[in-house]
Length: 254
Image 1 (cartoon, helix red, strand yellow):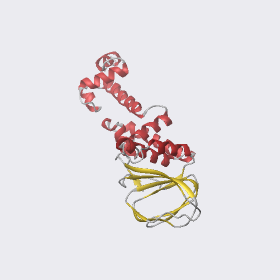
Image 2 (cartoon, rainbow, N blue to C red):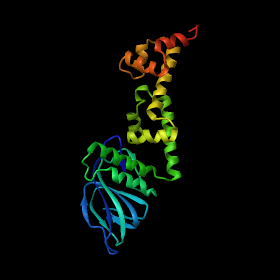
Image 3 (cartoon, one colour):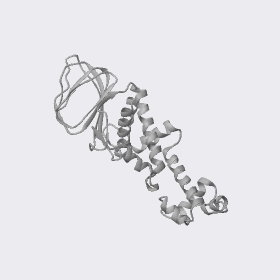
Image 4 (cartoon, one colour):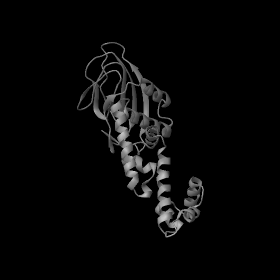
């Protein structure tokens, strides 16, 4: 299963279900959307066109659109469910996993509208919920995102300046923009946007000191649309204009 979180998902609706008795079996139906199941009590036995799944308490399952979603065994259980549309492309996503943090699920359940009426907000929320499930609450999952952060840092060192944007990195590494930004800050102690800006300013300082390129050309190479925008951002960050920084810091023999 793959999702590209840079492409907006479409949240449809949500619900909370409690089996009426021990003989309950999930109904058979054709389904054209993805569905997240999160079991809060008991065990859910659910199947799609190809696989029989057993989902226990504190576990989640994401099922794809299929011709015949159905229960394959009776069981008393309780679960939350979330329906959404998405394109299956991009980074790999674990279809099944564990998330012991019930508060997390209940938080997003309460934040999402009942029927996708707040399209843009709900689109962000369902994507972030999926990100939370992917990264889980285990040490191993946190280590996985730590590796992602290190990969981002390595990439940023050598990437072309126009690619030092949160939007570009979210597509490259397969994360939703908001989730990537929040998680990077949590892991590294600095907002991703600020981290990228510091890299750009660092490159600007190096070019001002060690090249004869005009300020406008340096700004252009760093991805700014005009010299004024570059100079304004540089001065706000450094405290002096690019020309003044060059004058004060350039070595005499240069």
